[in-house]
Length: 174
Image 1 (cartoon, rainbow, N blue to C red):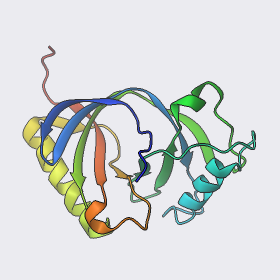
Image 2: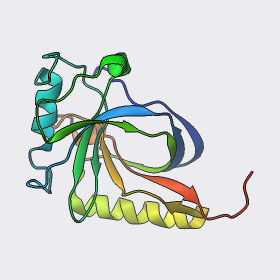
Image 3: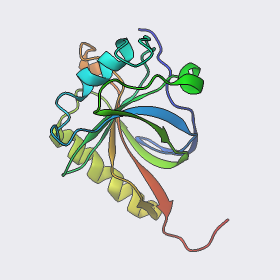
Image 4: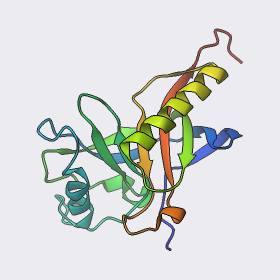
């Protein structure tokens, strides 16, 4: 299996299956469509964008993960833009897509394998929320599902993550 580019980060704390990571800035192309709140057309729209359905008519390398912002109102889905494209990111043709900067910051992550589904995602989100509470960190964004594998990858080789931007509950600073 080929290795795809992924956003750069430093692991600050690791307690299997949890990690606290410091991500550096990176860029995403985000699918956000009020008429498609469950992002049913998100992956196809993003795939067409990287296949050359963009204003530069340019093919863009696949990266991981595909990131879904989890929200009860309206979900969003995004591809990570490869670093080689950052100086000249092709603008999307689709009005449902936008190029955005994903700001650096501290993120809490829980990693798990197998196929992801609503029940498993809720379970992992609850476990991550409990871990955050124990560590005295406060979520400061919506939770996100990060998917790393193509649909045909067997369950035992799949890697998924639930992640959230965090701040500290503690008043004192280092």
